[in-house]
Image (cartoon, rainbow, N blue to C red):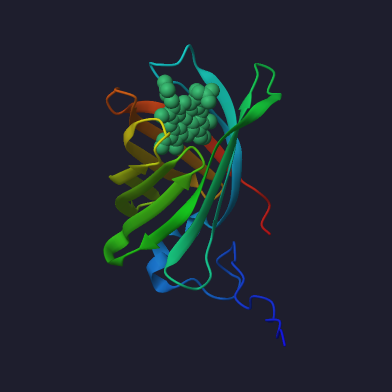
Length: 182
Ligand code: HEM
């Protein structure tokens, strides 16, 4: 006979004052917990021009020393009206002693990144360790992501990209605000 399992008993939490308490290694990234939303601009030498976009980013944890990370973006026209869905990605940021971070990030465009870096002084800086591509993905060689908490409720994000034959350079910058605490 089928014995149904109970509901998953360890939900993710999006704030530092909820149970379970964040694991001690998460200390340098505690300020990121929650959902962030804002606007940015992007471009690349291979693209016709700059573009405007909006982005929503969520960090949560389940009491263990890693963050669950999710981000989705959508393009905006000159009036701020949504044009179409754009990049999405999700992954895991594994916190190590001394603020070292190992991140695994995958995208529906066939790109899987392993990035390493540090979280310290309200800044997380992640650079490519390895990129894996599905057979039909665009060529991506490296990225660099910098997240800076400029105050409790403001997160800036800069993304640099080495792809399709171009050296590492600016692809995106955004300023995000914390959504109401859940
Ligand atoms: C907020 C997130 C992002 C936004 C809004 C964004 C936006 C865009 C846009 C608008 C394009 C032009 C093609 C198109 O219209 O779809 C593009 C191209 C591209 N993006 Fe992004 N992107 C984002 C994140 C990323 C990330 C994380 C990577 C790689 C790890 C990436 C790699 C690329 C590559 C390789 C191209 C193709 C360039 C070419 O073929 O000339 N993007 N992006």
